[in-house]
Length: 227
Image 1: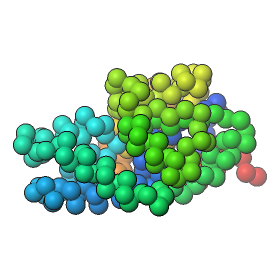
Image 2 (image 1 turned 90 degrees about the horizontal axis):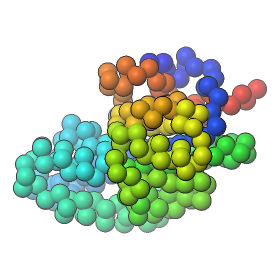
Image 3 (image 1 turned 120 degrees about the vertical axis):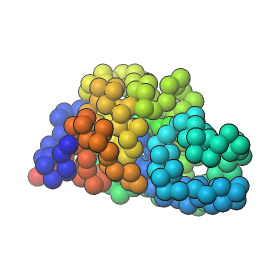
Image 4 (image 1 turned 90 degrees about the vertical axis):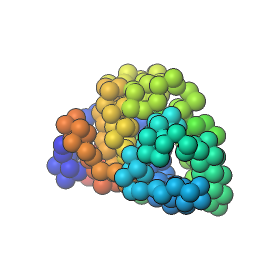
């Protein structure tokens, strides 16, 4: 795996597909706090290890992980609803955007390069958060958990986004912050870059040979010649 400093230029691409939470939006740390609070409220002790395993996962995968960790009595539906309500309350004043996101999207739009979002979040969550961040109208399409049969790490979310854009997946650049997301984009055949947020690449991810960059600013500089 290469670090950002090893990469001068990315291979040419015709479209860019972004993950949402942790990649475009700085929401994962907020959600982490909520997850710990809600678990305590419900009488369970959340741990860093369990939380980290949840990052980037689908609704179904998160449910499975929590039941494995706490047993079949874990009230996942209640947990999920409480987390959603609190997250919406705390994002009412707006959702923070990751460094470099607006600038990179602006550069892409200036060059006529289409963009999409491929997220494991459900449509109401994705629409609300992208809208609150002022980004929703900047993407040609947004693929959510409600649009696919198979969530990440399956490639279907990324393949669906590419199909909607009318671009061959091999000509798409995918940007992710989670291991599950990287697996999905890589399996779709896309040029995949990980921009870590809370999770850093494990050995399986490193074996894929993708690039890891510190921020979307680094991706933008690698994508476009600024001289």
